[in-house]
Structures are given as structure tokens and as C-alpha cells.
Length: 167
Image 1 (spheres, rainbow, N blue to C red):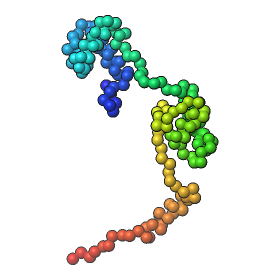
Image 2: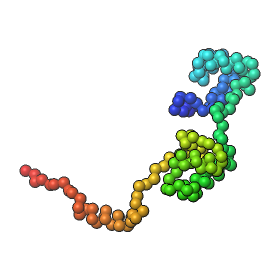
Image 3: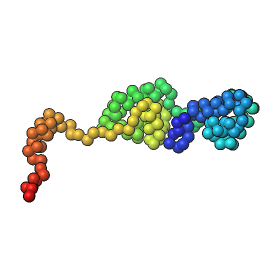
Image 4: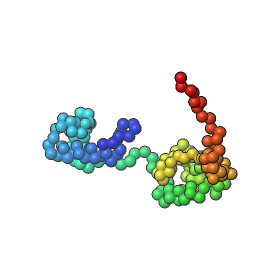
């Protein structure tokens, strides 16, 4: 079972492991056998067995996700992505660069929901967006001239190692 960077498993994996313990208890396996097969502590196996005895398999099901729920609905997330695709200039920003502060402002303007800029990256992650850095290139850049210079002029001015006469 996969663990995240904090050493914890995802909710689905944790629930699957608890339900596996329930099946082991239903077959008459001991706590020691559950500890050995699932790699959990004795205390965990004991707690799971008590829950299983009280409410069978349903008692070992997880409570679901923890933490605060997203303030934006699925439809609003889709609309946010459309807003981001329009670009920052549409919203009056000077450059074509999305920052977390700018996205937080757009979310506040469009959906009347306040997000701290440091938490906006979670929204972007839900949308499948990643942090990008803009290329620092001049608008006047001429790719054909650059290729020509690299091919013809650069070899002429490039320093070469000095060849020494062998004795």
C-alpha cells in the first residue's frame, strides 16, 4: 500500500486495510495474526477487533474525508478554469502571468468566495494545473536569425584549444 510523504496512507488504502482485518476476524483469526498479516501494532489490532465485535464490518468503515470541504463546487471549479484560460489581462492585470494573489482575487470577484493566496495552489491542483515560470524572451526575437548566427557566425568566433607540437 502506498504511503504519502508524511508516512500515512491514503483514506481508501486505510479503509481497505481495516476491512481486510474485519474479514480476518470473521474467519476466526487472532489479533496476533492480524498484526502479522497487515503489519499494524497490537493496539491497532485490538481497537479494530473491539470495533468489529461492536458493529461488524460497518464499524470499521472510514468516516470519509477529513478537513474542511472545498468552498467551490465542481461547476464553479470548471468556471474557474475557464476564467484562467481567458487570461489575466481580461481581468485588468498588466501582464499575462497568473500569480496566486491574482487567482485569489478572481475567485473573490467571480464567486464571492475568499481564499488565501497560499491555498489557491490546492485549487490549481484539483484542476490539474501546475506551477509554471514564463520564458524570458524578447518579443522582437527572430528565431531564424538566431539559427543562422549559431550555424555560421558562432563557429568562426568560437575559441579552440591550442594544439601543441608533440616532442
